[in-house]
Amino acid sequence: MTPNELRERILSDHAQLRRALADLEELSHAALDRGATGREELRRAGEHFLFQLEEHMRHEDDQLVPLLRTIDAWGPERAHLVEEDHRAQRAQMRVYLDALRRRDAPRAELADLLLEIASWLRRDMDDEEEVTLRPDVLRDDVVGIDVEAG
Image (cartoon, rainbow, N blue to C red; front, side):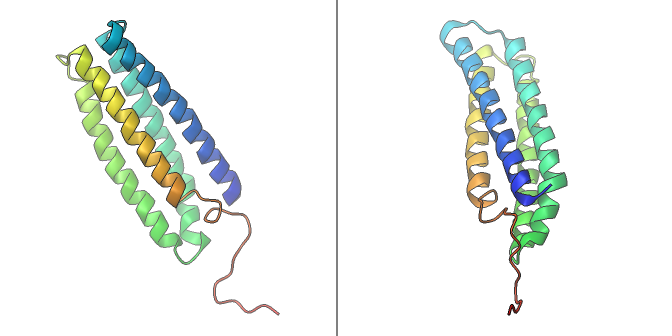
């Protein structure tokens, strides 16, 4: 997979995750505004989303991180930042999963938690797209460092 193809794939995944976040928000608002959503439905939706996110992150770990290490002089640092970000995300996801699995959690608390997850992940994806997934970072043309041409 070329750098540009990988970039497009990850951006497509992000678009899909954003659609799933919109569904979570809609479900949460239905629970908060109309009481139309039950605790188990909120819990299942949150868990399902976090599992989707883990799958996406695993793909980035397997494909993006190795590519970043090789793209330019800043590549190893970019790869390290993604790895650190994923470690922090996984820790936060464990906190969210624990909260979702609390059997005594009121419906409003679960709905608020899903809204928090949506806000958190949107910010994170925006940051990743701004720093790591820019076209000038992941591109197909090779730029040599300290290379003479002539």
